[in-house]
Amino acid sequence: MSHKKKTTKKPKFMIDLKNVRKELGFTQKDIKKFGQASVSKIESRKDLKISTIIEYLNCLGLQLEVNAVAYDENQQEIQRFELLKGNQAKAKKSVKNEKKGEGIDDE
Image 1 (cartoon, rainbow, N blue to C red):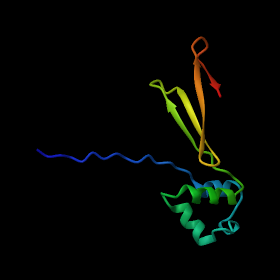
Image 2: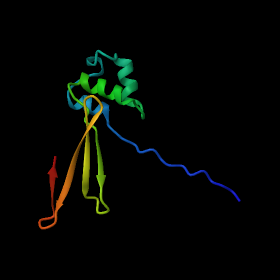
Image 3: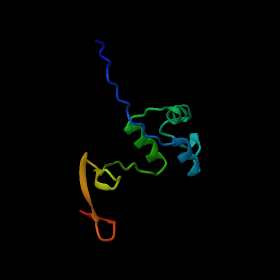
Image 4: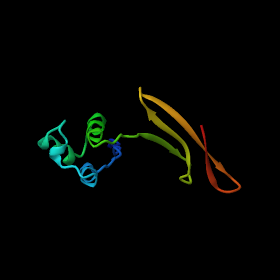
């Protein structure tokens, strides 16, 4: 009997950092914290540390927001967790209004 190892694919989170930079009117040289060669590497990497993304976006005057979201079987959002400073999470529960079919957020 052969046992096949079950493999799970890691989810891919994509952000086109090069496009973000260009949309904001920055050149690679404008990002002083990293230097042009490092910016080029960061923009072409497929896997980055979140801390690197945060530093890069901060150089562009942006902030990173991270949310964890739970959906029901109909792909309706039922709960959202927002990452806050200090590694805390704040939960926001989404409640579906059955009469109107609209979502109502409770904090």
